[in-house]
Amino acid sequence: MRTVGVAARWVAHPVTLAAAGILLFNDRIGKALWPGLLTGKASDVAGLVVAPAALAVLVALLVPRAPVRLVGTGALAATGAGFVLAKATATGNALAVAGWQHVAGSGQVVRDPTDLLALPALLLASLVCRTVARRTLAASSVPARPARRTAGGAVVRRAAAGGGVVRRATGTASRFGRWHRSGSVRTAARWGGALLGAPLVLVALAGTSALPQQPAVTRVLADGDQVVVAGTIRPAIGTPDGGWRRLGRTDARRLGIDRSGAELPPAHTLACVPGVTGHCFRIPGAVEDPGSAEPPRGAAALWVQESTDGGASWRPAWRLPPGRWEYLKRAHDLLPGRDDGLLASTDIVVRPVAGGYQVVVANGVEGLAVRDPGGGWRRVAVRLPETSAITPLPLSGLGVGVTGRLAAAPLLALIGAIAAILAMFVRCRRAGWWSVSNGEFSAVTVSAVAGLPVGVMFAVAGALVQAWQPTIALGVFVLAGTVAAVLGQSAVPRRRAWLLILVPFVVGAGYALPYLGWSLGLPVNLSDASLCAFAATVDSLAASVALGWWLGGSPAVATLPPAVVDMPPWYGGPRQS
Image (cartoon, rainbow, N blue to C red):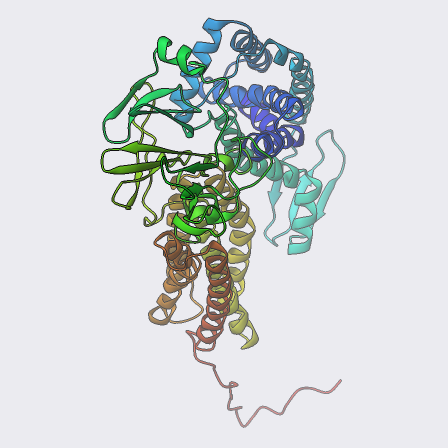
């Protein structure tokens, strides 16, 4: 078990946890906001510090009797070798990509030999490993001092190397002092750090792979009776109603388009109807490129204006409902900053068709917006054989786009349950029911201290990875803990204490319902949903405390009057000295 202890201390070391935090923040937020050399190399350095510790924990759990030196050295060597192969060789990179797809579901490992400059970070990981191994082995070699309890309740402890017998008191303060001096506090902190740090490390490693840019249409070009589309996909040719195929070499050479998609043709934000003077369509405030520094302006990023007087006046011809741009951005899982330009109208073309003219607008990940000769607008998907379909999404869907926001609901429910139970016990204490609620008060306090960090960890993990699993797991944990508290308490009658079960549901629902309503279109703006969620959470937490306070006013044991003892007639009272 020494190997397991060393691995646990390694993953709970402040250096490892700091590297995991940097890795998680950098890959989820930093690279999107500040793309460049610094953020890329920072992830490599942090990953080389975190990965050996995670690998050592896995090996130690599988082979707990393996030598400490072998496990530590093997984890460092395997991490370094795997990093070199993934960054410097094509075969190793392919294996790394396949491995991440099995572990994290999706991902991309960039082959870049310059990333090998981060290899000295393994020296820092090795130093942390040596430090925790030396301290763990030194602590385990200290001989234990036998102790026995006397009939009076005191503890008699003999010195480890001889000497006199020491009698110590057993009060609460004395016990805590001895527990602190014995190093048990540090041991508990290390194991607590391991229990909290290991999931953080796993979540950080699962998000290290660079997320590929989503397929999007950012350019449209008329070619006779067909349309050419390009963007983050390879150029394709076809019609909005007849399907698409890969652009051939001859057509690409004739149109001057790069078939690889590396260089895009210039965008057009204004197009006029052929043969009609003064009738034009335009994209107001269009983003020139997906990586442009100009941010889209909410719903105005997906709309088209029309003018019939040569541009003297413009009116909206097509646009998304206001406030739905943020919903579509979240529904498409676009990274903030990096992918904002992929949810915007970027190019427009007007071409003659049978019965009139057709307007085709490139809308990024939303595919195309098409105006038919009859005047009706519709959103059209672009389906290509070599990539997933670029499909417009519905403008509403229950729970779509709010997974990260809802991750905090179980945590707030946990806070509400703890606040209600503590308020109930405090009310009992004020009434003088120390014997009923003293131990239970301490148990709830300890559970709150231990449970809140776990709840924060699950909420952060659910928000970062955009997954329902951590949220559901934390919700089940909160509900089970509340039921256990109701069954285990003896401060108030159980038939009334069952009302505490409502607290997690009320607090969690008060926070989650505004966001679920926003996903369905009511309220329209995310800021309004956030304001409603904040107000509902504050009100529900206050109601939870009030409920606990009310329950504490009805203790399970009735107040006993002072005892009256009839003294015998021969008792003459206390003797005077």
